[in-house]
Structures are given as structure tokens and as C-alpha cells.
Amino acid sequence: MSRPEHTRTASTNRLGRGGGGGQRVLDGKLAIVTGGSRGIGAATCENLASKGCSLVINFTSDGSADKTQKLADQLQTNYGVQCLPVQADMGTENGPAHLVDMARNRFQHPKTNKLQLDIIVNNAGVASKAALQDCTSEEFARLYNVNVRGPLLLMKAAMPYLPHDRSGRVVNVSSVSSSLGFEEDGMYGGTKAALEAMTRTWARELSERCTVNAVNPGPVATDMYGATSREFQEKMSHWTKNAPLAAIRPEVDRADLVENADVAGGRPAYDTDIAGVIAMLCTPDSSWCTGSVICANGGFKFSV
Image 1: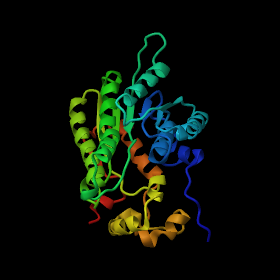
Image 2: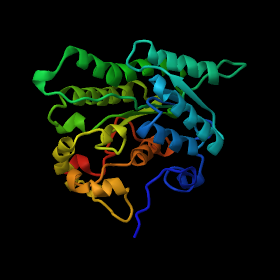
Image 3: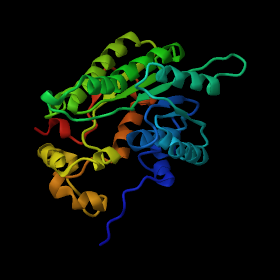
Image 4: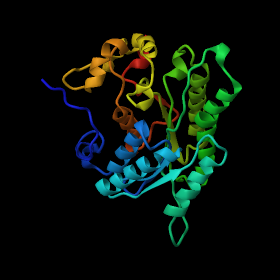
């Protein structure tokens, strides 16, 4: 029996988990998604667009410009929403504010000049691994500037444009590394722990404006995961083997993940798995959930 490829398509998202059964519960909303050109970010953009949400899709490098424009064009065609690709480095002091400025220039009301940012997904992030003796100030700054300062400055720039009726939604993309203490993750895991701490504080400070939550994926089948070594995947396999939803399904899962399951201990999440949880937290149904870290990792977090 041939294995079907696990792919994300417009038709499946309209009818399946991405499209909420065709219900456009986010019609008229505007979202900023950082790191939106690929992986979890791109999957989140598609899920939100399928629910009727217009998008500011952030990307960083020149090499991602064509990919992001193609994604924006596809989402506009498939879902009838407006999409604005914006290049901005979330690791710089001016990048987050530039992203908000571009959103204002494109989406503010032509007569009232009013702009409302309904949803912010702080997804952009960088990662690296280093044992304590190999940590450097330069790499510490790189990780913290993108993963911690970037979301902080974006929220500061976006604050004047958040709703005033608790309808806003902020989702910060964290990681199980914030709490599981993986070797060589002192710096990266620290950035995600800081992001979760800010999540709880912002949930209080912005309680009349928006809900603020985080999600904490484990391994996800993105380009970043694909670039990891066999040694890394073997080290992670102890947790993966015990994660309830990571058990491989040869008749359903992607062929490359099935073939690698013995090494990895099962399968990582698909980007759509994480995007679905993020999008759930962006809907009106999540209005009584704030300040929480939602486990979007197939049970990886409680598998030890």
C-alpha cells in the first residue's frame, strides 16, 4: 500500500482542521504573524486566512522575499483576504516598529486613519545549541534579541492599535525547551522561558485589550528540524517514544518520517498541527483563556 503524502492544500484547509469546517470566524480581523514565510509561521498564516483573517506576513532575509510573496498571493486568491508581506528583522531595535508602521500604512482606514491589530503571533525565532563552556556573549545576544526583545518591542509598538474590548489575541510561540532542561539548551531554552514569563505579565497588563497565551511545541517537521543531526534526534527519542501522539502511522504519515521513526522515536509534529492550536487561541472561543502555556506537542511535555 502506498503511503499518502501529508500535504497542506487549500481544499483540505477549507474543509478540514485548517478551515474550521468553512466557518470564517475571523472575517474582518487583521493579524501580524512574524516569521511567516515558512514552517509554523506559513501554516499559521494559511489557517488564519482560511478563517477570513487578513495578514501582515513578516519575513527576514532577502532570500525569503519571493517565497513570502507567493504565499501572500496564494492566500489572497484562495481565501479572498488581504495579505501584506513585510521584510523586517525582529532581532533589530527598529524591525518590530517598522512592521507595525507598514501595517498602518496599508490597513488603516482611509478617512479615520484608524488601525486595529486584532491578532499578533510572535512566531519568529532563532535557535542554536551550546554547552555551557561554549556559550558566547555574541550568540546570547543573537538569541535573546530575536526571541525575547523582538516580541517585546513588537508588542510595545502594536499596543496603541490593540482592541479595547478584550477581543484581541496574542500568541507567543515558545518551546518545550523552556522547561525540560535539554543539554546545550541553556541559552535557547532561557529565551523561551523568558517569553513565557512575558506571556503571563502581558496577560495581566493587557487584560482589557486582548488575551495573551503561549504554545510550546516539541520537535516539528520543519526545515530547522530537517537540518538536525542523527545524534540530536537520537537524544530526543526518549521523550518522543513516550509522547502519546508521536507514534508513527505508516499508512498516514509522511514517508520520510516513517523511515526515520526508529531513529527519532516516532514522528515530529507537522507544521499544521501547531498552526491549528495557535489558530484555536485566536478565535472567539478562546476568550476565557489567557496567561497560559498551551501544550502543543502531542504529549511530549508530560512524557517523562
